[in-house]
Length: 77
Image (cartoon, rainbow, N blue to C red; front, top):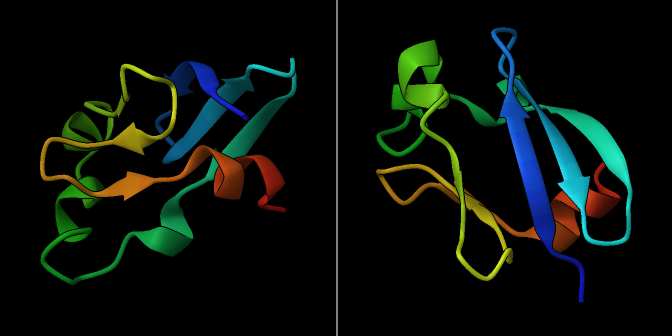
């Protein structure tokens, strides 16, 4: 089971991710940020940088409950 162990948000709206299998990658989140109610707040870097890892490492989330599964992010090209 893949877990996220470390995150580092960047001003270009990407996040450097480290996974439990040692993989490190930088994922661009701009394609996921739109004008809909749930993703729109992420257009502000101050809000974007509030990203957290679930306690069990099984995903990323923001205060408004916008979230991503680690398996998807691990395999996302």
